[in-house]
Image 1 (cartoon, rainbow, N blue to C red):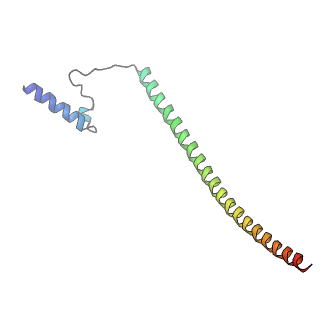
Image 2: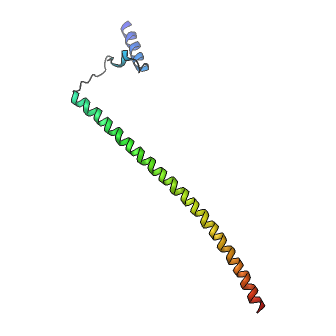
Image 3: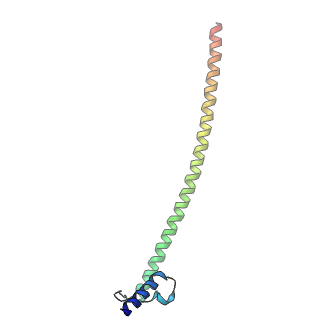
Length: 108
């Protein structure tokens, strides 16, 4: 029973104390220990570095696209405003033309 409580205590410390160097290399009973070669380790590190580089490139691309989308959206909003102003001005000119045409047509 004492062995079980000691093992449980070590397991609990291992799980809760992830930054402690005392228990990072601890192998609990019934855990699998895997041995890899230096070449395999280098491949794992290389793959992780490559993957991180790809993630960073994708994030950079996403940022550039979002920036471009924001610029285009602002330009679109500005053009919509100008379009509205021009339509309003055209409608006003049409009304003035109709008034002038009506006055000219009414006098004759």
